[in-house]
Image (cartoon, rainbow, N blue to C red):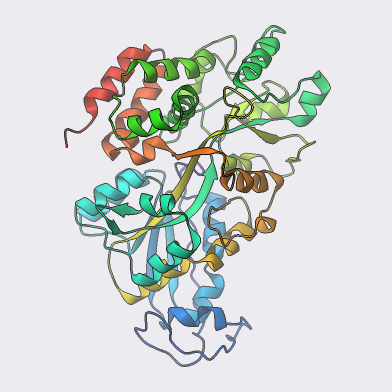
Length: 456
């Protein structure tokens, strides 16, 4: 689940920094102008060229509240994307991030205290908020940006019952295995290109008495989500895109034998004490290890591989050499053959709880190619927006992620738990996987998740 994140981002709880400084808007004020306010391409007092922001209008001293599950360093980076926008439009974008986003956004909406905008890591949760009458349709400017910059599949994730509500924001590749190229070279290990090669390498490392894998699924109120990603990747490798699609839409039940087999495929690693949890404990320690700490034993040579998304790059300590020959890098989690390329992806979607003009201006900016390139340049993330120049990616890993996202041969599917009804995808699936890691039987857990699927 982009992420977030957020649930897909940093797992420790922290409030995001809010932008407190609002400089004068460019040119004459166009109070209430949602788009196209004329600044004449003038510069702000700080010297920013405001021509690119004319289309969003001018709002002197207005505030737009943005809520997400993005926290700590990544929250600061998100805030930085609004610096010039705020100078030129006068809109103070105040972002708050919470590790309990999935629960709190519902509580706030039901209590009449919804934010202006929210970044949803799960289309399933977005759909729930739409059907409950809280999220409003996206304005034409946002839909135009999405039609130009994103594929129909990505637009569909922000569409509910044929109406468009939320633009994609960022994207991530989930099907990655983090490792140490330097450690691999020292030990004479090669990057596997098929699933059988991956398991042979796993067995080879374990035969030395070392632990080939490390993992962590603790993430505050979202504990369990990293294990759901494992299951989703295995369903793609077990039955391809067709099985995956039917499972996500519940045409194939959660406790179907094919899904049981996929879970056991993940369990052959995650529940095997000979394979995990290097540098931390036995297999059950995965449940209490935070997802951001899960791969760090690689740096000490206490484990060799950690399956986690492209955004995990932000978790390596400052000064870590993240490069193809360095201390940490990632390879594609292989399919059954070298030619098969099942790819699990994640992302986030910006939905609005009102149609105020300032809210729509921020929503339109966040859906633009300009915003996407600004965010990618700042670093640590990638995007499937067609306007993004891969050269703007801040690392080799993120450039690799963009290449995978743009690979037409890849069987790419969005994070399944994020597409499922939130009661399952952000509820019973998370808790069930935590119980599973803690020793519960696969079939028992999947039966429980299946029983939790809403009747309508």
